[in-house]
Image 1 (cartoon, rainbow, N blue to C red):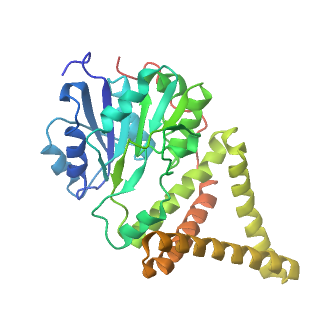
Image 2: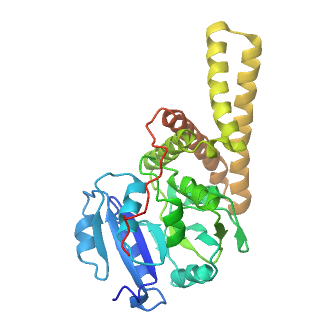
Image 3: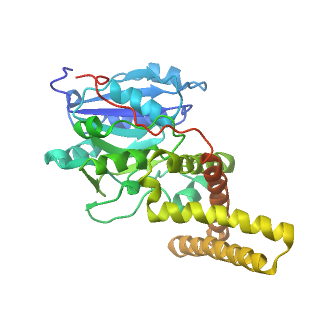
Length: 337
């Protein structure tokens, strides 16, 4: 494979994914594009469960190591070593459609596109809790037509970037424990590029199958969102983030004041907030039930949503105290050319 023939670099980050990594890589390697039109780079964050042994048996890939351990740093390792004009990114628990690379490459014919992403759907093999997690549909918007979107509606589990856009905007912020994708997307959009959602660019996710791993993921996502408030001064001023941050801190102050003083006003505010939160979780359960007609999902989705928001909220508050670097890693003089 020559560098002049390679148009797309696929970067896959992996950490202890022995059950899914082979299926994921096979779906990428078996694309409907000629094999000399793309390369596959796998970045291992220090797997200890046998993943590395499985990677050694897969041909047609390059395996790199990530010494830092965050998702952003792993993706940066792959990007810096890539040679494609388009850099597609996904994870080791994703299975991509056979036309994935063809679909995303068609989007980069014009110079204005900085990134394109698509839906993250549940893998057909998801059962039990994993299937219920997929029904929450928290990961991906469900646009039915190609459309330009905001920075926080594309996810790096299913995304492709223009190399020049990354060169201009910078790489992923490696100090973020999560939410590194909306932060990078913001910079790319701020640099003058479009962000597009393409519904035909589909991948299928093996969702978390245990409650502990699911809540841990939501906690980490919340922590990354909390860090964002210290990373990008303009990003943190968007209305939703201002409202989210203010709501959490006001809620904590009101709850503490109510517990300490027993103030009727603070109590009324606290219980009103609790009722609103309960109604929100129940509404999600009703939504899932109407779509699936499974009675067990009515309560299950409500409880899962409550747990997810609790874990995310705790992570969000924790993330506001975690160290996060404001500057984005630069690509200048660090990428292969």
